[in-house]
Image (cartoon, rainbow, N blue to C red):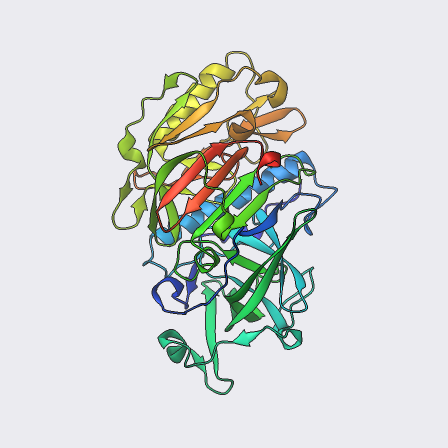
Length: 443
């Protein structure tokens, strides 16, 4: 098994963004499409991913998924402790969950961007770029007929963040450990394409044109920020978006989809969204296993002020994280059911995981569904959402306890829990739509 990535140990080094996107008036005239903008979502470990490693074992992939989730949890907790919009979580290189396939400029240049629902800044490498070593072609704005750098007099933010020699509106994102992404703001045309479905275009999109990057941003094209900040890509193209996630375990699965704008699939039961600090919060009222409602006081899921507690639905984590009281109840129930017929096993380097020897697809065939009850909607987790195969002979519960020991910790609904569902965000109406479905059938 490959050694743990250094970023896990540095995850507490949170990002301080010098760009306050949600609170500044960087205006955009982005065009919308009647059917929205549709594109593929490619899992990091998919054979379609530029980061696909054919030699990676099941154990390798499981470890990386866990490390991604731990790093994300640390970031989210750090961002909650900052002032609104002063902290942003940009993904770690090669360690995001889903890549977005898109094209930028005219002529269009293919890019792979990490989807991030926890940040509102969209940026990508621009040639010339100091420190960029992405595996995809670097976008060269000088060769695009549709590139337009924002001038210093574009708005008050740009007037205060200006390269006067070039007359360009600038941005900078700096980590405590020295990692950074910096450059200028510009507008450009984006194209999204899916085979057999055609292409859709979004024009005059504001993005950060990165001219210099440092670790950990060397090997990625950039970040697609879908947070709820005013200038996130989601808000630039119509205040709605949806994604349908089929399978995270199957590297050949090719039906994960992202829809931005008017065509967003807003179906199923809805639950209120609380938009704060760039994140999407939900009102979780309880958890059940089969017909058994777990004895969890719903107060442990409530948000506290300032910046503590609550339940975040997030695209940057894979695992589920629960505060101590909720985690203990769920874990003890799983132990009682599964432990009655399967033997516990300890995974090297991860003694705290709840793991069993056996086959999840066979031995958990009769395991009851786990339901997260939100205010007005339910998220139903099957076996592949609750458990993750970690070796050829063992599997673990893909739910962990938030690291802290206080009731103020946050809860995270990661992407494993969102498998086999279409999740729709209506930012303007502050509603989230949840529908269990076969993603191959979602348009």
